[in-house]
Image: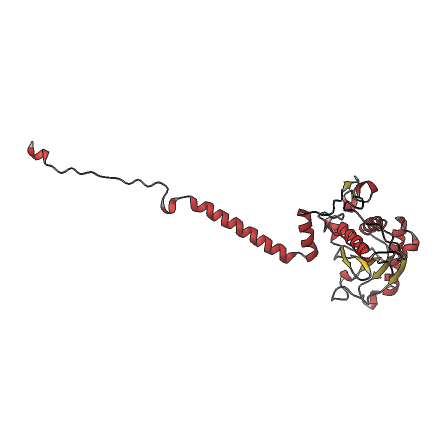
Length: 269
């Protein structure tokens, strides 16, 4: 009995570990957050590199709009999908972020700052800088805009395999739709309009008539399309053909050089 009483008591403690070490899952949450943050960072860097200053301004304006223009659908089809902002009822009125009073073409009493704001708002409508463009993505690929000392310049140009004119000076359906839309935009103001035609250089052996004739004929055809949209003929201040003398692309034979330039002219000072 005594021997059994004096035997040492051995206590064995077993430490239970659950989810410890590298088998835990908490690190996965932190890693997922890190990957998400890095993806957002690289997306931001890509956007900054792939967009122009005007496009970045448009993205910023989309999240903090300052021009409350109500857009409505016209229910149509074609290049613009029925979108329209041109009726009096769908434009915010002056004092609520809409258009200022259109400048008088004579230049009398025209405020340069008011005119500049008006041209900028018209450009926003075309390019989507205010958050939404009135031109569909396929059509927008054929247009660039720029506000210059002369006024609001809009270039409509060919892409490879996608001309805006067929053979000679016959406009494509895309060009007809674009000019119709621009005519309605131009109707919102009274500024004069200039129309310029440019063509790419062509080998002499395939030229059926000179670039001067072709560029002038194309510019005049666009003038006719504008007037068909109720643009007063008196507003057309000049129609010129520049042949291939002012190429937009380095390669003088590039399709990009086939273009029509419309300028909404500033009022004379």
